[in-house]
Image 1 (tube, rainbow, N blue to C red):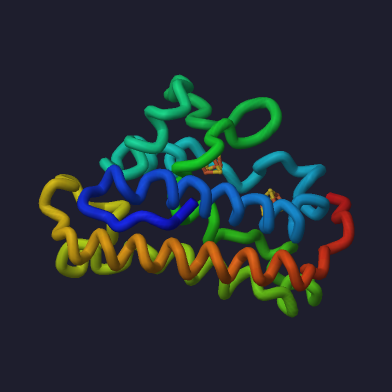
Image 2: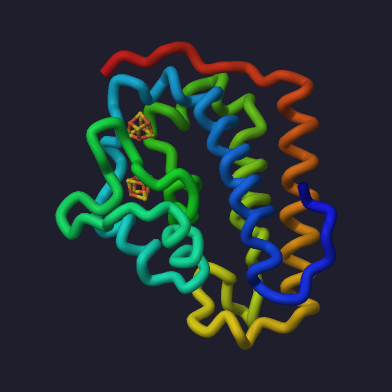
Length: 173
Ligand code: SF4
Ligand code: SF4
């Protein structure tokens, strides 16, 4: 995992997926118990839709062979049906109940997410990777930079997991 040199967008897909899955595991560890009674109250179909408007996320979604629902987006009975390829705002947003929790504030989760969101920053001019319409216009230098960011984030997550992370106690609505 994460040992090759990049030439095109296809070369970073596996690394991005592996990283997003690791990030989700960590978020689940930290706020999963907190959100467990809620099952995605903060999820909205218009947010889900952002994933269908991104050329990069579309590649990730196609790999999962799931159907987008015009009414509920990706939200299913047990939460988000997207294993990976979620819009970045899905990672950036935490409701007030979560944010005001002292343990959440003390955890490194927001810094980790900021780094994850920054992976595709300025992929083409000022445009973030998620918003680039034509992925063929990305230079191999930029793709390698994104690949480097993925590797750095991946190793940072592994280090954090090894150290252990403080969990937020179960939250009752
Ligand atoms: S972040 Fe807040 S609103 Fe969203 S699922 Fe968790 S507890 Fe519910
Ligand atoms: S993509 Fe998934 S996490 Fe994001 S708003 Fe939709 S259901 Fe929620």
